[in-house]
Amino acid sequence: MSKIFFSLLALTALTFAAEDRLVSNFTFAVGKGSSTGSLWVLSRGDAGSGLTLLTLSQSATGVHATGMAQEFLGDEETPVQDGIFSDLTAEHRRTVSASAGALGWVLPLFSINDSASSFIEPAGILSSRAINAVYSTPLDVPTANIDKDYLAPMNQAVSGLAYDSTTKVLWIARGILGLTKYDISNGASNARVGYYVINASGLKIDTLTSQSSIDGKKNPSVFGLALHPETSALWLATERGLYQKVRTGNTLTKLNIPALDTGRVTGVWIGGSPTQIIAETSVRSGSSTQSHLWRSWNGATFKEVVFKDTVGKVQKDIYDKADYSVSGIAFVGSLAFLSVQTIEGSISGLLKLDSNGAIPWDNENQWLYALDAGVVDRSTTITSVSTFPLTASVTGIAVSTYGAGVSVSADTGKTWSYILNQAAVNDNLGSIRMVPSVIVAGGTALVAYKVGKDAKITIEIFSYDMRKIRTIVKSVFRPASSTRSSLATEDFWDGYDDHGRAATMGIYYVRVKDNHDHVGWGKVMTLGGSRR
Image (tube, rainbow, N blue to C red):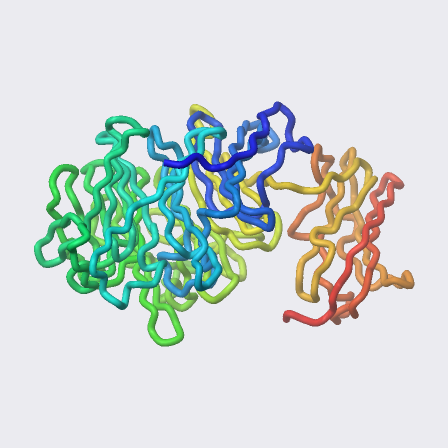
């Protein structure tokens, strides 16, 4: 076990002080810390990979970060593989994690592949026990005879984690390499490790040794894991259906579910009250990916998740037609929140399920909750979702994003607070920030400003020769705020003028006025063009 190089910044009581920052706003996973109100955040950006441990508190104005501490992971390994957005198979489009007792928050690890010069080589697991105790643990790869169709590194990558707190065993899904049993019952520093493959014909798990031969048909790849809270059975999402393993012994039960019996099950998630079991099947056929969502509600037979529109009419093949893949699932009572994104696309958001199925609302993508639902404060990709104990009585929901830090909800997704690194703005329009400061037509540049008291705001765009080309908002209400008063769903420029024409490449000025005689100026550059 090797200690990763780290750089420690002490926790402070200040919110968004200069030294209190996420490692990066490009976040890929979130998970509960060791205490109430603490949240782990995984970032990977231009500066490299790292973890932030947030200390969060709830107030009448939302959720606030009262402390941040960082752990940088260096340049040799990262929990985020390079194909996270480009991979065409659903099981590799998520960064899995698990809270695992004395191991803390556990993530996969990848190192650089020599031939591709990218982070796609499985390197083991990352154990985050505290901000100054983060460990890299390699996992052996027995020199078995592996089916030649499964020799690519990502076919052997960690794609699922499940921790049994009673036996103190972390189960690790490793694709064609089957299962790894990481037993810490004798202590986290004295782990016993076992390696197994699925024996589909014998309905058991066989010990994997250097003499073993792994056949993709006889030994299906394991993609996802979940522990049933009532039966203690380990559920396995595999290349050839769903299996169950009882807590003791090595026998398996193949679930006789017609829809999932022989399907390529890429993930399984269990939780909620009453208990929900959600499974995803995904098959790459030609140039498209066919994915489906299945669910067992409170012990009932698995059925495909129902999508009804806002007038109650069932809509067929919604999940499949959009080519979605699940990056994470969080359960809160009877609700399930699924972070999803499109394969070979940029659409993402949360699906919200109740006992009847997906809950729609009146927006362009009728079942996706994202920018227009307030889950994020700017147009960005949602990468995962998780729950954590925000207070002794409140379960928080946390969402990671590719570029907008972390969003947190204390009221089961009704409202959200945003925690991210952002340049300071001064009261009463003393400074105006455009985020980002360079866009193309059809992009989004947020106009960030702050007013010291409630105000009516007008935002206008001027060309370099001071011709007004666009009015963004006129005399709209914006509240006073300790951080920013701008509303991301309205206070942005998309690079177009008032006539819908793309502004030519160049620098433009942004004027923000309130009804208290305060005026602020900002600057933004557009590269022209069009994404419409």
